[in-house]
Length: 82
Length: 149
Image 1 (cartoon, rainbow over the protein chains, first blue to last red):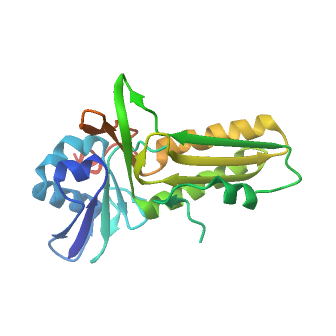
Image 2 (image 1 turned 120 degrees about the horizontal axis):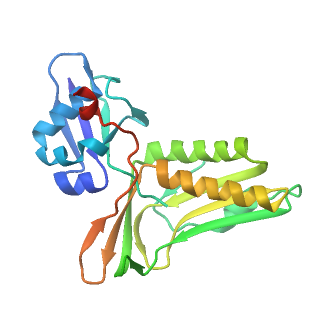
């Protein structure tokens, strides 16, 4: 399945990428699978895993949240708005 | 649809107009602006990044929570993103209530929740040309990877 991953804040800086297309094997996957695939493509993400959150579309997601072909997975570091 | 996250300069007047209410004797406005130093380093400006669609939802949720938790009649939050100069307004929170105590409490709640929950990130720029993303609050822990172990 094809997904898009989007890196926000310092993750955009560390990966050097705002958005990328990734291919996941099979037609069933979860956010956890997307994170593992992104980690292979962007090893610098490893330093941020302990504080990483993810979104699917416009919603926060758990590691077990199912994802579908075409989904956009957001990689969200600790937030600092205001 | 109401816009809460924008890269345009923030305008207070429409927020005041849309929350006008004769039943309210208190109006509290919180405004965050770009400060010229942080931790002793001279700051030249700030760039805000956001997951806009999710941030819009979170800010709307925080507004609704403020109305539910406190005796206030109006709560509006807008946040600017993109490149901001010193003194530029990054956020307005407008609260109207019958009485001041509830209005202050709700405004404090709203800004604290924005800082902890809105998917928005600050990159600080310094006068020496360097920049860095500020440390923040993790949205959810443990991470997907940590959870998988």
